[in-house]
Length: 452
Ligand SMILES: Cc1cc2nc3c(=O)[nH]c(=O)nc-3n(C[C@H](O)[C@H](O)[C@H](O)COP(=O)(O)OP(=O)(O)OC[C@H]3O[C@@H](n4cnc5c(N)ncnc54)[C@H](O)[C@@H]3O)c2cc1C
Image 1 (cartoon, helix red, strand yellow):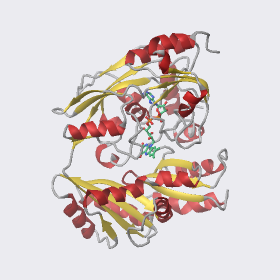
Image 2 (cartoon, rainbow, N blue to C red):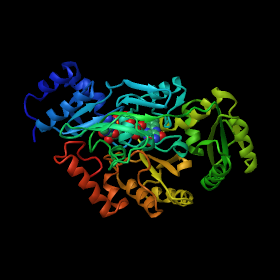
Image 3 (cartoon, protein in one colour):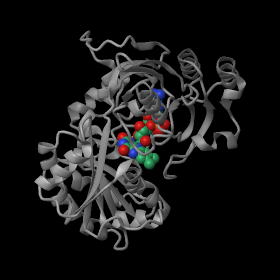
Image 4 (cartoon, rainbow, N blue to C red):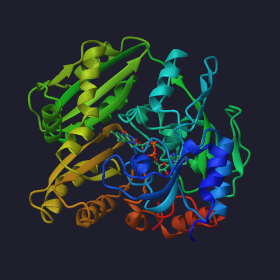
């Protein structure tokens, strides 16, 4: 269907003329993703300021025959937030108000466009912490994090975004608003709609507000970078720390080629002698996180590690991990994989990857890092053409052979939809399609995302 005439005027009457972007330059930022891999064309960008404006915009687009791409901070890594072919982008970024921060109960009601950094700052001011954190914190939004069920650095302790949601509000394809934000901690009244929307990638509805839980703010934190002889030893150390170190909050894997890349990119000195791999660990507690970490490392016989002395050095250590994505992107546009594996399978996959990739492109460079505490690897392959899908096939099939998941935390988007049928069963896919068809029968939300 061609969008009918008058669409711009009708939308402008709802959100104001300044919030309907038609001009090519004004649209440009909304049409390309963070990696530069996904680029399309939006017919318009609409920027509503309230849930009601979202609902009315959705109805107008639906009546006008226009498909909709919901967009938050546009930091997603699977091409799910960028338009392809003349859709209307509904950007939630203007909806950036913290509606309520309840310091007593440790609950926040936030609009969908509130960034992770704003949310974390408000939580800290109220004497709490938000359980999710990751490098895109300055741009990633509450709505986007729910829609992708974002993970990040502290999933091993606090769970993923789904576990932080107490209540949700969302606009469906017919403009109806579902959910509630009353902060009920127990609510077994039928299907749990927040869970359904978490990870729905903008295909079922537009999240407008959410009630989120906050977690305890530990007074003491400590970090150490441990040198290890490879992924196998790294996994072993993390397993032992999980058993013995109650305050373990994060455990990240970095391989030597990734560390070299980020050191060069950030023009920094090597923090400890060269090893094949490293584990960056963090402890957080209300006692003495540093002593707890040092004791735990000594107990399991770690011999090569550097402990960050104080908050500044901790931040510097974490910049190494968080700078990896930027350092890789500075070299080229990578093929990115975000996979998770069953216990003990990381080393099998890592052993096979070099040969599998070299068979396609001998000069390709593989940079692997990830959230080891969740057995979640971010595999980046540099040196292949953007449109070259061969490496995607080879890597994802290898992950599936190891019993893994082709998407641990970034979602399916457009990037991984071709492989979804190999990961999920026919029955699973039929149930997912039935849900999509009943909530969005005309398929106006995010066409081409999740399902091919
Ligand atoms: C440097 C860097 C590091 C990252 N690290 C991590 C990490 O550690 N863990 C992790 O999980 N992710 C990570 N990401 C990926 C990304 O930041 C997350 O997926 C994030 O949750 C996306 O939020 P966003 O607001 O940018 O969403 P967008 O990119 O705008 O959108 C992502 C998806 O959600 C949908 N969507 C957005 N807003 C809404 C809404 N209000 N209602 C319905 N659907 C919506 C979009 O249509 C799209 O499908 C990283 C990204 C970068 C660039």
